[in-house]
Length: 94
Image (cartoon, rainbow, N blue to C red):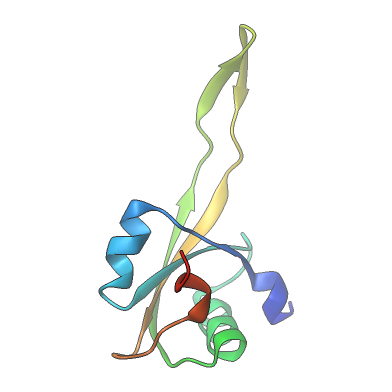
């Protein structure tokens, strides 16, 4: 798996903004990606030093559309902790 395939998109939310103050960044990642692959991908793509990685499998919620039951998509989320003072430029404008 290539580094570009591991990281799907950054998460921009209120909680993710609070975590950025603690040098933690949140990404949606490929469901089959391991913690080691995620750490390597973030380090190589953004030229930063990664301290740790936490992953969460977010399961889809049950929803209804026009009276019919359905489900939102499931995805995998990673919280990546960087060395103190390191930043990722993608999040600077957010």
